[in-house]
Length: 181
Ligand SMILES: [Zn+2]
Ligand SMILES: [Zn+2]
View 1 (tube, rainbow, N blue to C red):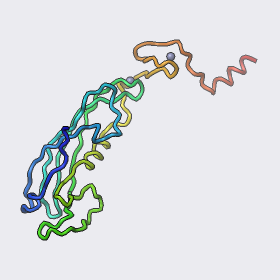
View 2: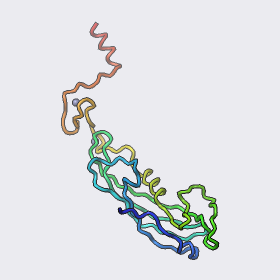
View 3: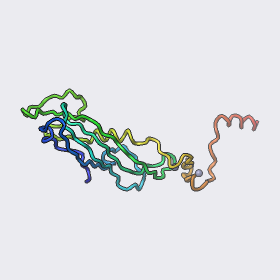
View 4: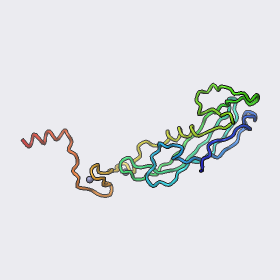
């Protein structure tokens, strides 16, 4: 397991505003973003980066960049296409425990992904998942004019041709009928 997405910030929360430390972040791409369609045979892909955690008035500001590369399938022919992923993190995480009294507090922040839990764990998982999903190209082509696979026999038309007859456009078929009569 290479995942490193959760950090104990108990000490940092006790430090004065402006204090910071850097953490090394790493995640397995497929585990982080199960929706991602990696190309068949794509090796293990991870994203890594360095994030600065800084004590602010509200909580902890997490700021940094994580990046990695992987291979996704071409939308037309399924060939592996290398893609670079780079996600920017810039979020304020808020405490759910009052550091002075140890009592739980209800944060004003409504997004629970940005809550530091009762064990003072700041979890970047959800934030990174969202960022990576936004960064991922939806429709990847191996090349602009990829000819794709034949819908009949599956031949990769970039590499070979086949004898399948292309479907006749319905707008023309009535004309063909007309000509036959
Ligand atoms: Zn292709
Ligand atoms: Zn064919």
